[in-house]
Image (tube, rainbow, N blue to C red):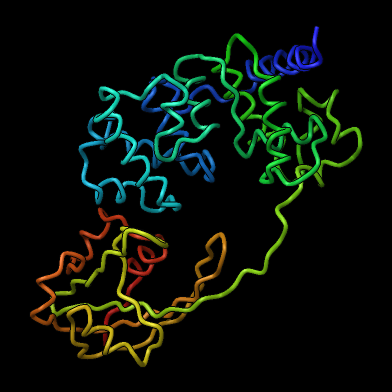
Length: 354
């Protein structure tokens, strides 16, 4: 028997036994467990916790219950349903992948691993998770929770995002994945990482893998997995223009197809408050009265954005009607749009213009 077989033989049964007693079995995407629902949940769970995803998932499938309805939906509806989850490229890729499935795969997610992994937003780990959970096929996964479990259990040094460390973790992931009960195993190792083998203060006393855990034995749970090498987070600044007409509608501007918040509806921006009037005219509005609101900071993964809101009463200029990327929206209608989270919060907390 190979070393890999020995590892899998000890690892999977202990994990599955723990899952039978403590695992999460009533998540909304598990009942019913269809390929579409599994796929949607896996995309939503990328960089987002289960507790946050549940409400968004239910709202999304209520509106777009299957792949065909997702493919046919307007981009604004998809982004609106996603609004607040962040990392909006996930929603755009989800939409594009659904359309490709209709065009190239008969309206279904492909069961072929290479074809599935080639779809936008579906890489090696997500493809494995879909095939394992939707069809019970033996494929390993390696999301953030799994990386932490494997790095600690096997004592793998190095940042998991590096090529060499990721290669080693994939080898352990493949070796530990059993031939039977793959769907349960996949959920089990994700659950263990999310609820027991957590980043800070792991609950080693109740972990089924503790007897053979290298990190526990060597008292290195705080060091494994290694953190990403730190970089200074720069701060950028912008001024957001909240332009309201006499009816109380707000002028929104659709952002470009690339870059931060791509294709979302947002507020017009300028670099400085003293340039506000000129920026407003550029987007088809003439400021009548304005005041500056308190600045706040929104944190992205790679930088901090300091936002100064400028609340203004404005009049529409004639040429604004000729642009598809500009629209006046009533406040009540904004809730259905794909808006960046800080913009949504800003619009929800607007004071009246004096």
